[in-house]
Length: 79
Image (cartoon, rainbow, N blue to C red; front, top):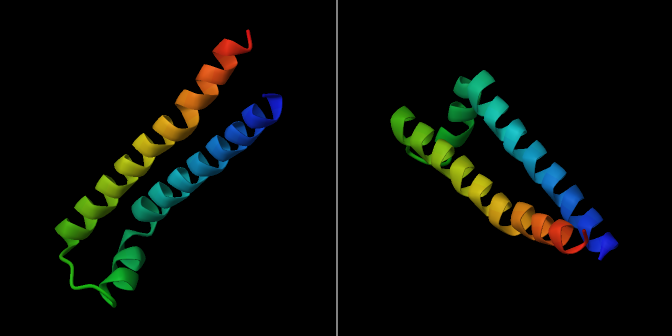
């Protein structure tokens, strides 16, 4: 059970690093990020913003459901 806690903890760290990196890229390099994606997809800036913020929110919810909750459950059972 301890190994599973360590795996879930590292998954949590890596997932939140990805969320923070994605958010910082989106905020600090918005124009570059938009130009990069608008080469492949025809998106307005508003749609691009909505898709990114929505995707970040969904990813964050998935991290909570599949990393935080099981880690918390294992931590509570192990007490």
